[in-house]
Image 1: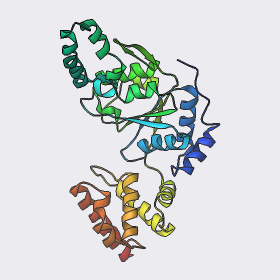
Image 2: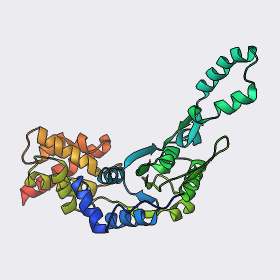
Image 3: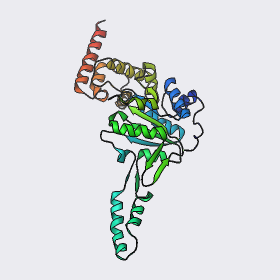
Image 4: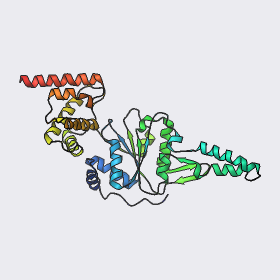
Length: 303
């Protein structure tokens, strides 16, 4: 492995200010972890509720640094052939069939064909190998890592420990530069202690009112400060309820855009209730939030 590439960031403040230029509002904690991960060459394990900006953080860092974003979307059943590499079996079969004619004429034998079909042109690279082999700066996003099985998690740990891959037919492939790696998790299961030790840990939770308001003002062009303030206060009130799934930051933004498209300048209980399906995805949650909004309005009117 070659020496680490020149540092992308001068300080945590540079990370925070830089991310702001690509419309990602990072706090000091987020900026500090990104800075340290880049300097130490360590992956970042980002945990927190769904929709709080974990995936967007990796995308924004890639945009800020001009790095190539390579994404591995995790799912149950993901294995080495989809995460790392596999051989192009169809192409290999065609090569073998085409060679039969040459063999009948006494040309190449099986040993020549075997060496040929397990060569570079027949290799299908997947995200992990793609990131390791890249010559240019790379941000590797391993999204929803908590959805993979323990065996695949062990594979990830092995790759992230040495940044090299052993391919029996081709030898060892080592990284020419260390990618900046983000692993995201929604905490659907506990990850191994070994994987956690390999990474820097970052928890991204729902932002406070002022920060979420700033996010809305930044990401929803044309919205007024008054409407943004109403949106985030109502969302915060809904999140305090016992719901199957609390509204995420991304859903807050969707709701704000919806209200703007509808030409709504001020949100009352009726407007909020009629558009709750943008914020909430379970009927039981919608009914509970609607009841809370109605009772809050009735209480306010009686005072």
